[in-house]
Length: 115
Length: 110
Image (tube, rainbow over all chains, first blue to last red):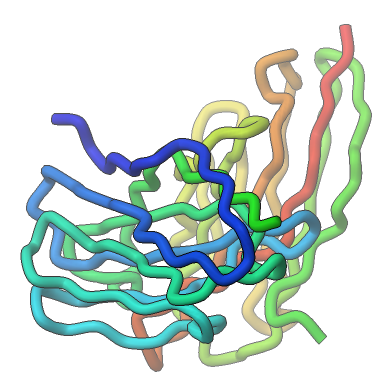
């Protein structure tokens, strides 16, 4: 199993550009989520999904959209990039959901710089 | 006030030392507690889940004090390979969301 994969590894955007961060898992996990990590802030939840067709907002959802058309994929879209969105983005998955107190499996991260 | 607070460190300790980290959380409805380890420029990985009042796994001991709302991680006989950032993570029963502390950086020196 590849686990959780993320693409791209690095990305530089100009303010106002849009892009999609890809996340895929091959463990048949129902729960997937996106976090951003900024220095000294820890990981903050952006959006999450408890299954295909179901998404919900996390702590910092503004400026981001998600969809979950399949169990495997959970892309994160930046609608109009801003310098405040410069961060490291992690995707994570787990079998049932964070509410079940399970291990979260993280992808390797995407480092995004918005100029 | 952050929901999950940790001393950012760094904690600089010699090999073989015992080191302890604390973490406090603000929501008394918290149900699940974890310590994750994150190496520099890598993704977080689960170190320990904390059950009941605490548990032990080799050199690592995690304890939970619900009355005082804090979690601790004790590392005995520190190794160079223990150098990393340790993240305290709390799950609230109300939803499917994990809340992360800012992490405590540990540096083990020869």
